[in-house]
Length: 197
Picture 1 (cartoon, rainbow, N blue to C red):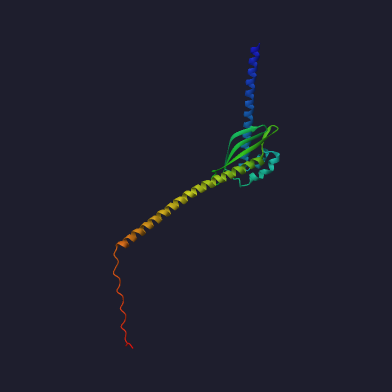
Picture 2: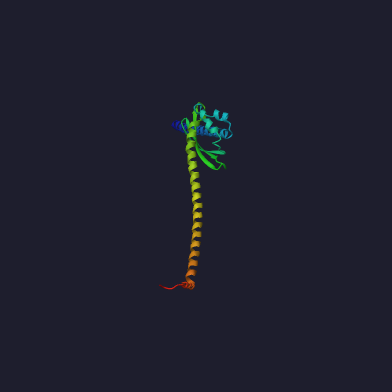
């Protein structure tokens, strides 16, 4: 009888672990789907769909995402962290003229009743931080490339100066090796016409 209870206890424990894993997996999948649908709506300028996926308190901040200043071309979602009724989805927006500037964002979701909703205000806060990091990275790349070009230009200038100095030294050697020409005879004073008194 004790063996049956023990097996039943183990069975219940395993089943509860499996169910909790499924529930967590289901929660993270729902959070990812809401995030993907939200960002696709933003990129498509479908603000009505985006508004349906946001918290009531943060819907007013959608205007900042609807401006052309965002100009993201595409996005990717990554790791999901769920802590009670809050979820964070790592999101990478690709902006810039060529769509190659990466802007890391944490899409923040709040669990309301039976659905995840995007907290646009907190998401924008993480976007500002991510955009600043992206700008700093772009500036670093620009400066690095600029310094390489400057180094190359400086090296070329030094080489030109070196060649010019070498030619000057060679010319000076030639000039010193050649004997000077005879100096001109001084002009004789003109004869004076007059008597001395």
